[in-house]
Image (cartoon, rainbow, N blue to C red):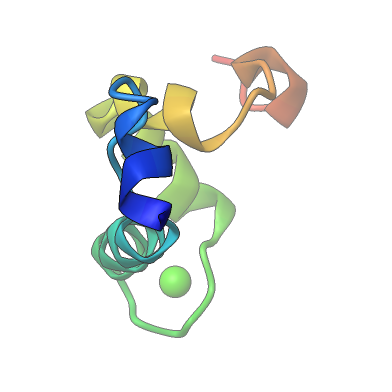
Length: 69
Ligand SMILES: [Ca+2]
């Protein structure tokens, strides 16, 4: 039943578990000093390295973060 339901939405092929795994993996990659928190600096580094990833993780415009030049 669930599989049939998901196959009706080919554009959304990831399960919740897969999304959580992806976010977890991303988190550990971004958490450079491994303190379990994403600091502003670590977040800024991620944004610089993965602008496309950011688009999937938040809808907040970059200029709302107070991270100007
Ligand atoms: Ca950290």
